[in-house]
Structure formats: structure tokens, C-alpha cells
Amino acid sequence: MRSSLPDGGSRNGFLRTRGAGLLIALISSLVLSRAAPAQLYQYFDEEGTRIVTDDPYGTKKKLPRQHREHPKQRQGVAPQDIRLNFRDDVSYNFYPVTGRSLSELVAATDSLGPFDAKEGRRYAAQTQWRYGLAYQLDFSYQRQGNLVTAQVNVHDIDFRPEITILLPELSDTRLLSAHELKMWEHYVQRILVHEHDHVRLVQDPRFRQEIVDGIAGIRELTFSAADEGRQDEAVRRAADARITHVVHEHVRTIKQLNEAYDDVTDHGRKPEKRSAFFQGL
Image 1 (cartoon, rainbow, N blue to C red):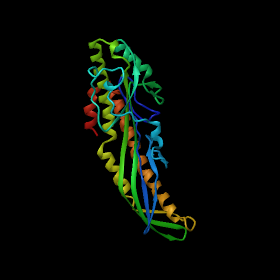
Image 2 (tube, helix red, strand yellow):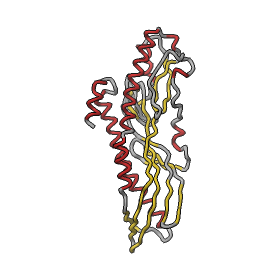
Image 3 (cartoon, rainbow, N blue to C red):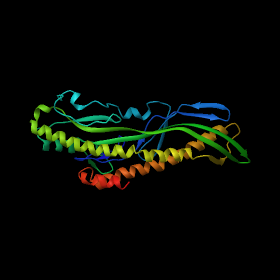
Image 4 (cartoon, one colour):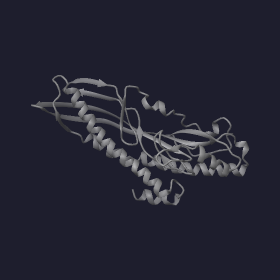
């Protein structure tokens, strides 16, 4: 299926992805020999758009973390009934479905699963992701006429995703025979494999390193001079703008890769295409 942010998503009997990412970012700026710390928390959505807030929870309030809670441990599902392969580095949320057969349950996911506004349809599951950025910024600058030239050093860069997968969950396993229950388990596990492939793309260390290298490569900034006494702020704004541009371009690329993966695998319904896709990266 597809991964996406809370307002976009993966669904269909299998999955789809959209990307975006967000986490907590703490920025401390050192201006010349003076320390000027600013506590800002910034996130990047699937479009690469930067969101800044002074709230350490920020937009995370829109994405409650009910993670690492295995469905078998939840009310209405006996421990021996459902066994799925979860990851420790991903959060999991669940929506309820009810049925007396696999076909009824699949129909329930088609009608109750997360809605993808872009495609105008629902899918059985959804991978939501966003990126967060943290770094330290040191700089010095010179003003010459109406221009400022700043030498900057962006270091201690932390760029990583926060990922949540939304899955269907049986409201009552007692409605199913042992055979139907096992078929349901296989069905959900196939969905989960596809969603975890989206996690694999979002967490690919090569993409992360490209972003970190791009940010660290920002060494010099030139811009129009601000009013006297406001140059420090102007340097920080210019650095933020350049960093945001670097992240924006890379996040858009990661989103496009997730969408291409859904196209190649038909949102998980063609699992035989998985290996060829990843070999081609």
C-alpha cells in the first residue's frame, strides 16, 4: 500500500506510500563568540515543507503514538490467535474490522481503511512518515555595503524519520474459524511486508547521508544586509532557507521513490516485483 502523512496514505488490499517525515529538531546558534541558543522544533512533511514550532510535541499531537502494542495484546484478541512481525523502530496504530470470513474482512478494509484523497480510494493500511532535523549552527560574517557574506558551519546534524503504520485489527476473533483466522493472519502479514518496504525506503541510510552531506556542505552565504543590529538574525534566516531547500529536494525524491514502488508492485499486490525494484536502486 502506500505510506504518507496523516492526511494521505496507503490502502487497498495491500499498500501504498507517500512520504514525509518529521521529528524533533533542536537548533542552537552560536553567533561569533557569543552563544545564542534558540529552541525550535522543526518537521518536514512529505512534500518537503518545513514546519517550525516552539512546542516540543508540535504536529506530533496529530499522530498519537500507540506503538509497539501487538494486536494480540489488545481487547478482544486472544494471544494465541494473531502473530505478526513488528519492528521496534516503527509505531503501529490500528482500526477495527469485523467479519465472519476473510472475504468479509477484506471488504471491511476496503470500506473502513485509511482514505487516500489523491487517489480517491481507501487502502487496507497506511504508512505515515515525516522527517525531523536537528543541528548546531556556528557562523561569522562581514558586511560590505549592502551585502553580507557569512561563513557558516552546520554540524552535529541529526536527520531521521518518525514512522507509524496503520493496520486493520479484528474486533472479535471468535467470529472466525481457525482456518479463516489463519488466512486473515497471512493477509495482514502480506500487507505488513509491503508497508515495511516503505519503511526501508524512508530509512535508507544512503538518502539520509545525502541529506546530511548536503547540509554540511553549506559553507558560505551571501545576502542583502539587514538593519544594523539584526545581522545575526539575518544570517540564521539565510542558513535556515538554504538548509530547508536541501531537505525539500531530497524529501521529494524519497516520496517519489515510494510512489514508484507502489506503481511497480501495484500497492503490494505484485510482491514478485519487490526484489527487482530494490535491486534497481
